[in-house]
Length: 116
Image (tube, rainbow, N blue to C red; front, side, top):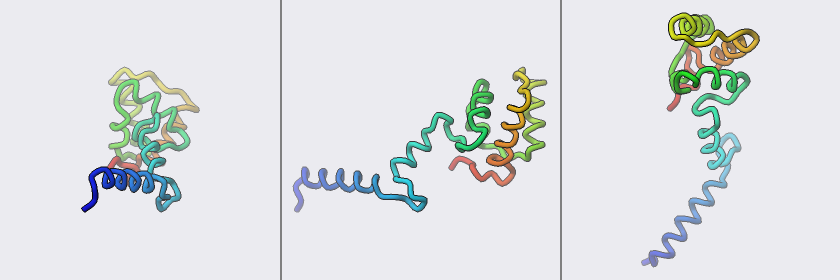
């Protein structure tokens, strides 16, 4: 029978070792956790995420964005609705186009980045 202190030490060592093991994409397990806790919440970190995040979370959580699945035209219509009906400030180009490009690429009808 293994003494309790030895068992605890083995579990701790195993956990630390697993955190350093590369995953399929080459990242360590600890890196994956850090990605999930990025400054942009659950939004995919890619071109346009910063503009999208800071314009949208002024009124609602980034999770609302991540749950949607719209075409670029659908996102554009939604932004128009938010300005006209919800009092959102109008976002001018080129920032508006950058946001729409980001949303269409990462939160489209296929919902490739739907939070799990």
